[in-house]
Length: 412
Image (tube, rainbow, N blue to C red; front, top):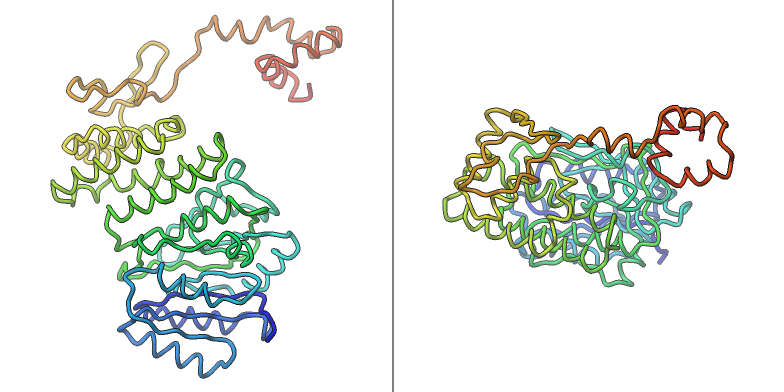
């Protein structure tokens, strides 16, 4: 039996009527017959989805392999089962409520073969208000990393993976995670990949926000989300290079995933749960060195994280309400420093450091002059009036380099 180019794995649990569009998009792929196989795993659906899978398999022999199993409690189990059955050179995971553009798989396989990619990130489009960060999709890219792109914001498993990479490293989703189990899987694959690429020139993958908000992530509890974030960060600690690569991954979680759990939804939790969320957040911050990337985060996110770390749910509630009512706070000017004037700023009862609220700090005039040097000399310097050996020495000074660029339009 010929090896297909790509296996699409679809984990199915009560996604009607969205499942029909998903399956239709697979039937309608431009990839030639025999180059595609679909492994659909019905995880105990009760809405007729399992029967629909059998109908499509009967109508399209050779395309669909359907597996029925008892409900496992999350998407990791059926996804792993589908992965075990995959035979293609590449594998792509497709949500049962999402769909693919007609040429998506053909273009992805062509790109992966041409670039020698282990992972290809396809252009993704949100449907019905689904939020999909677009930072990484500004152009096709043969090779990207966490330090030089927005890859840290694209950690869902909605990608094309070389199956040999997955098998060689024994990559599987953690079935103990009810949500975000795809992110540690994807992160490990990207960190172990020889090349990660981006196909941004075609709308490949359409992610749907269901009207009933029934998507797995939407209905997940806050503690389940925190456990998923912890699993992601553990992979980062073990495999990412310290420095820019690791910091980019930490900034993703602590600049977005964790702080968003400390917004309006926090107010709806019981008092006991609010305290527990604070305790678990504090553990994450300490365990994974979140404070090392605080300088990358907006002030509001830092403040909410630290109020949680202090286990002050009442102050965190006040912060959330203030942000909802007022938006950006007033700016407090203290000498050369400017601070976000949230109510928690310099509140003696909380004792949060001023640096947490720092927006910007202006350099002293003497410091600017010392760094830049005399302006007349700089003009002479970059007009070629200073000997070349002196110019070469001064070019090693970053301050001189910046000044030269501003005076001479960056021509050195």
